[in-house]
Length: 71
Image (cartoon, rainbow, N blue to C red; front, side, top):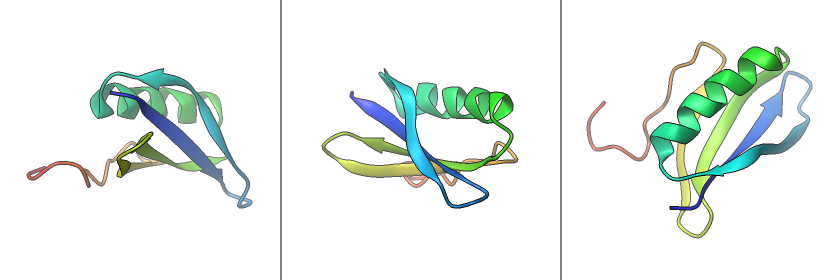
């Protein structure tokens, strides 16, 4: 899979999280690590490059699991 992440900060700025990931689970883990490094980032949206949005990971490390049938 070609999974990427886009971040949003407290001030509304946005950007692309570095890297491409093989699975949404790998991208979620990278998003949590990314937010540890950058404390102003409030959410990272995980998406497939051609398939669209998969899930959001918030500041608390929780995922919305939009791509999963069950939590």
